[in-house]
Length: 200
Image 1 (cartoon, one colour):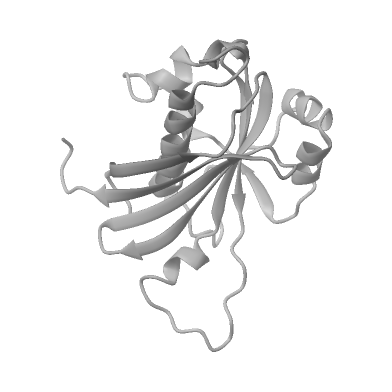
Image 2 (tube, rainbow, N blue to C red):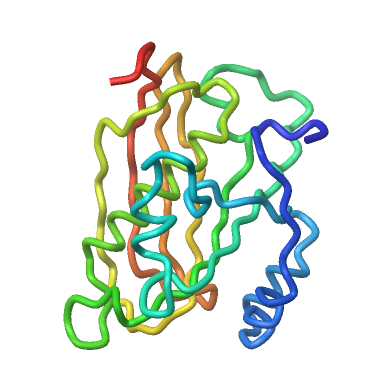
């Protein structure tokens, strides 16, 4: 993992995913970004028990989440004279970005992705960046606020982005967006996670 501030699992972009992404100019640009490191998407990994079963199994398929690829974005260098404190740590841990291919099986209105799915997706991308943070051992969502900006037509290729806005003790504040990589913004989210001492 080198000096990365995340508990990341490196995973090269598969030839199949590269072929899918190459069909969209903005996706191809992401692949060529040297600050983006391809990593595993933990919620898409089928586990022995029922953890992540909703995303790893139920929503996997040609009419739901057809393909997915995550990236860890390296943090910007800190200014020479900046002071280190709990709130500024969020700058040092970088950002999580995930490309996702969505099918029409996620619709609410005709040809429009269901807002409930976008809420789920925002919660999950924010949970992913929290789970990758070394100091978060057993995090749970305390609240999730979602703002819908405009309808998301399907099928679609979207980009989720998530980053920490504040870190303080066992509390972690996170923000996220649902975008199309070409200036389109479909939803934003903000959430608070708390690292609990024992499993609920």
